[in-house]
Length: 307
Image (cartoon, rainbow, N blue to C red):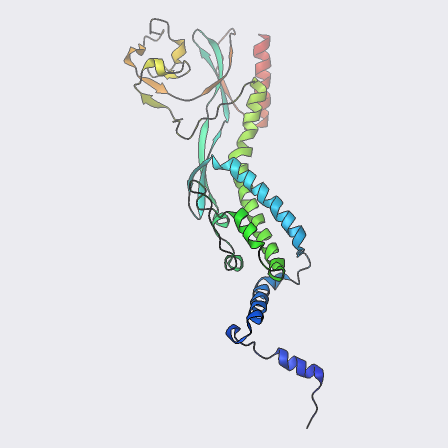
């Protein structure tokens, strides 16, 4: 009989199929379940770029969760529609400064808010990768705009009950998914807040004023209404003559012969940035999304102030 070495015997034993869980002793079942779960998550174990240090990953995940929560909190008020796959946001931006001559009140610098909407893929906030979804039960956030999104803070806290042999490969997978969410939220934050803020900051610095951001329910497009004239802001446009309501004479008529007693106006939202009384009639506009146009506007303001 040919002898079998110890090494060969051990290798043969390793190749034997594992017995079913229900045939193992209770504690052996626990160990085997952890081992199988670890194998499911450990596909990247040989990747030297991945950090499996539990303490460091916990600290990093806490930091990512906090940053994600801050970004989401900033963007929530701009949400107009949510689902488990996409979320629609609305933003207000300003792109043109108009200069116009107004009767009685001189020259006005105004700008009109523009509302835009865009939908973003927010699947990563509503679904987990399969290897994570099978381990810890997830719960969504409170009812309201965020009801389709997973509460990742709770999910992470619950995951800490896992045995270290499972937690070690689990945390890098979770951190990777949270970073994917951060990229998603960063794109939303850039479109909703940071991009419009460039023009807003320019206007506030140039005209020393605070920009007013209309709410979702405010109709921005010109529209005809027949409400009480006293309810209109002095800067709203009269339908009959196209001038601001505030430019009408005290008897209700203007030089164009209109009568606001008809209670018919074109309501259009805009913000007056500057009033000034100058000689001549200036009517022009500046595209403040263009750096050269911004410089031209500043030079025009200097010219107006000298005059």
